[in-house]
Amino acid sequence: MEDHRSGSRVNFYITPVVLDLFDEFKAAIANRIEGLDFYYNWYHLVAFILFVMKIRHQETDEVGRELINKGIDFYIEDTSNEYSYINYFGLSEFMSGLENYSPKVLANNTHALIGMYIDAWNNNLKSNPDIAASMVFAKNIATDDDNRHITLGFRFLYNQFSMDGSNSTIKLFNCKK
Image 1 (spheres, rainbow, N blue to C red):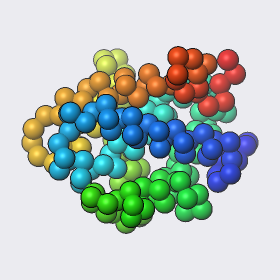
Image 2 (image 1 turned 60 degrees about the vertical axis):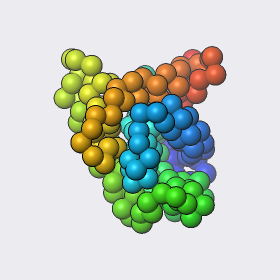
Image 3 (image 1 turned 45 degrees about the horizontal axis):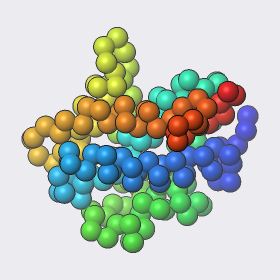
Image 4 (image 1 turned 90 degrees about the vertical axis):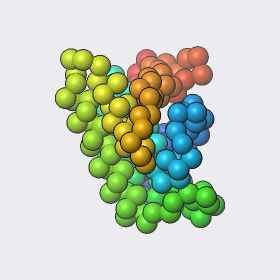
């Protein structure tokens, strides 16, 4: 199997996609999250982006799916790539004005959040798994008890990808079409 670590095709795919989608997703839901929520829970956006990337890549070939899954796990904890999750999102320039978490906490929380989204997805396969996962995201990004109505968050991210990269979408990794 092809490598999924630093310098690999999958690493070069995941890194810019996450950076671009973070800004787009943040802008898309800006009116639906409070400043305090974003201050403390900004990393939830990255976890949700990575979760949607995993789900969306179920449509590509088996090798592509496996590389994406391994590549995402590696991307979360990679210390050698300056644009990896813990290196880029842990930068003091990025963190200015946000709650600063240690790389270990960021990595552990991101893995845990992705697991929660996957559980919500799998437990609701017959009835709107996208909304169930989005509701878990909304509940976890909130710092208080009010509802966050971000149920279309999954669809927004999901629709950023396509099989062929048409209409300014991101082509699925390893897709043969």
